[in-house]
Length: 264
Image 1 (cartoon, rainbow, N blue to C red):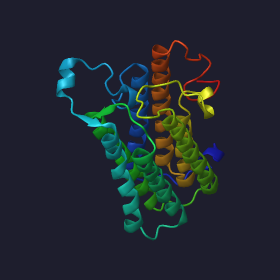
Image 2 (tube, rainbow, N blue to C red):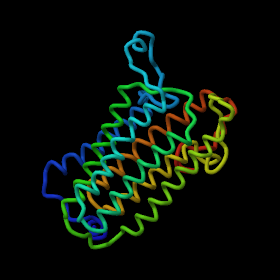
Image 3 (tube, helix red, strand yellow):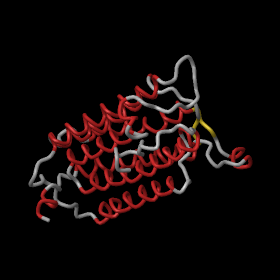
Image 4 (tube, rainbow, N blue to C red):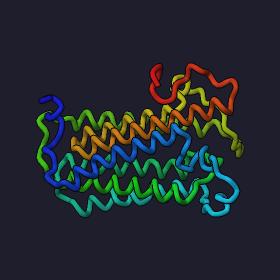
């Protein structure tokens, strides 16, 4: 028990912050479970999933590139603004805000120069995801700025290594996916390079690793809850992605798991 409490900064006195920590985990776990049950956030290969004609006529659709930029840009700007709003918060705070800003900057670069899209995004899902990213980013920065004190065990340098490994692995597997589509191709194929021969969503695996790195940098209750929430959501999304590939490709290799090699 001492070891567990030693990796956290002192808990915030605010009941509000403690409440949003719990809500974060519950909400993201529920969204992940909904993905497993077939109720998907409508982007990527699931952007038009289970939509009937009447709902299609009512839904506002965005191009994939526009939708993805809408997801990531507000959080990137929030990260940038934090350097101006909180200029003297210390080294750990600088590491955290830098990691968050770099994370969303990488996402924007990928949208503009790496990803090759074949689908769109429904505006309702885009708003929900964008707000989730923005609120979570702002909350993580705000909690860190409260100056709660240093944890007994300092993990920020380990967290930096995990974050860099996560963001690099995520980028690499996004790059591999983009290389599967040449000359304007839009159809999906079974990915095989990198860790794709072990799991269908290695990019999600590395994203999870990156957010656990962010927790180790921050070492706050909120960052911990967010890392758990991201893990639950991406587990659900990867499960749904594997099920989609199994339904579309008869030759999909059954040994390829969803997100954790040999396990899940």
